[in-house]
Length: 73
Image 1: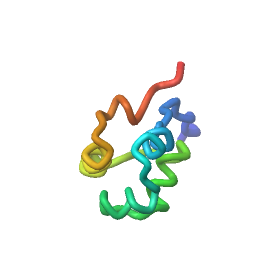
Image 2 (image 1 turned 135 degrees about the horizontal axis):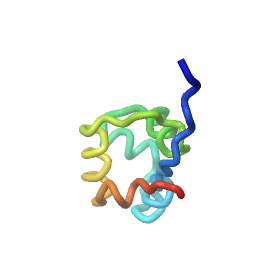
Image 3 (image 1 turned 120 degrees about the vertical axis):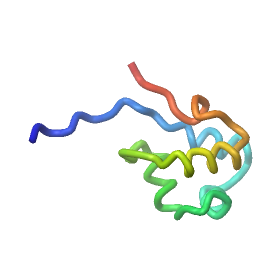
Image 4 (image 1 turned 90 degrees about the vertical axis):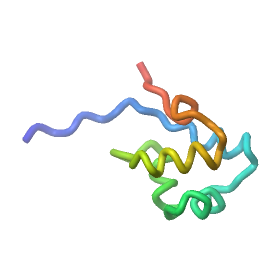
């Protein structure tokens, strides 16, 4: 099996948390996931995200998925 290529998806969760003045711990509680899982996402180490989690994050931060992620060229 060939080695997995690194992804180019960048998560803007840190910026959105700052804009909404909410902590990672508070967001984790609102979304229903652990702060560790959100930290993995925030630090661009996640390999996947459930649509239900993405929906909950977008609801909590009043944003769209395109505001949370971008693809680096």
